[in-house]
Image 1 (tube, helix red, strand yellow):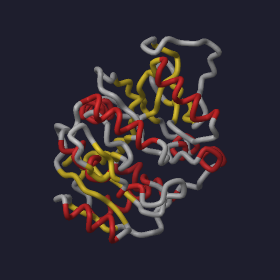
Image 2: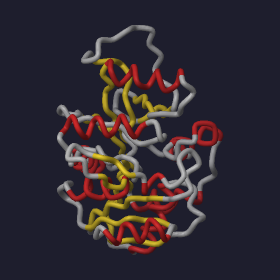
Image 3: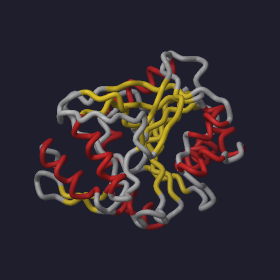
Length: 266
């Protein structure tokens, strides 16, 4: 049984067409595509038996093969990354223990996020999937609120119960807090990191479940599990000094490039 990482990537993003091929310049001045940076982030994860880029677009497939990635060609019918991972699983067959979805817009994802995610799912037999959450500091919370004030859909927040089972995910900032926090201060808000570790049965079933009103309103694929009544385990992770942000909008490129320079990443 193997642990497989799938990086779903599509060209026709509503908010940012061609996003996987967007170029990001690091500390050395070298420009590297978003999809390659995401693939290289997966290379640093211990415990993965295989890594694949899953796409329906020949341009992305060609770029991925060019930097050495294994590619799985999926259909254009997949409505989100989880459905694309489900298609990838059908191609890979039955000898898979866990499928990890490292979304192609998260090149700053530290390897321990995925490692802790895999361990967390193995330790909770009832969970259909696991996903990491990161407590926001004041600086990150301020950035979240600035995105919303500007009308941008930025990062996602998560709320969990005492057993770390997800209660809700939102593109709004939840829970509400009227307090002002110093940049380095802890806040009660958790940033949902768009990475998932699925049990194969749940991933295979997912495309057959109806899309509910919450998933429709929020545009968040993980809400389909909650609306279908399946537990989602939230694994709290720590940044350990690493910077983290996803590329959701073109405006995120300067922010991520600044983080790459600050971390000395090429």
